[in-house]
Each structure stands twice: as C-alpha cells, then as structure tokens.
Length: 121
Image 1: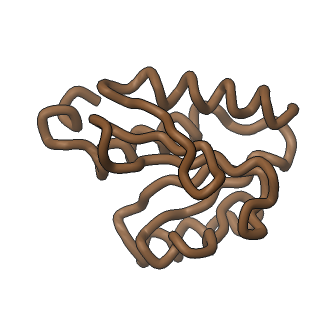
Image 2 (image 1 turned 60 degrees about the horizontal axis):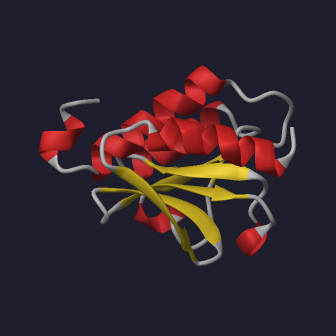
C-alpha cells in the first residue's frame, strides 16, 4: 500500500469519531478531538526516524512495554512522544490488520477525549 492510501484509510478511521479533526503537527498528520488533544499521528516519511506508522496513546509505560514485548515487529517506542505514553504501530509490514488499528485508535481517542465524547465511542 502506498503512504497516500494508508493515510486515506487512517483518516477515515480517525475522522469518523465524534468531533475529530486533523492538522499537521511537527510535520506529521495529526488527529485531534474537539479541536484540542491529539489522539493519533500518521508518520509516512521517516519523520524522526519513524517507519510508516500510526502513533496512538496508551494508558502508560506498562501497556507500552507489554505491547512491544508481545509484538516487537508491530509496535515500537516512538521518538519524543513515547515518554508521554504513545506507541507506534508499523504499517509497512504487509497488509495492516485494520480491525486492530481501528480498535487502538478508538482506545487512544477515549484517552484524549472529554468524558462526554469518550462515552460515545
């Protein structure tokens, strides 16, 4: 899949969520909720050494370590934002599992969204 096709698919997943929007953030396509908090980033050009991937929020360090340990070929610690609870999911290793990606995006959205919106997802 091309980076443009991947971005199109990621955008459809992210922008289907209540009050979700998009903007460039530090050179990456970012997705935010209610014009404020970011819940996903799409990296497609080696930004800060990242592979073609989506970065999403986790509950914290424990979850990050568990994900990376369980599937080191899929998950990685993203530069700069990893310390804030974000995890990278590689999209450059064959056909992505879109159900899994959508689930991780929804979890990330719920962590970033105001309670009134998080309840809708």
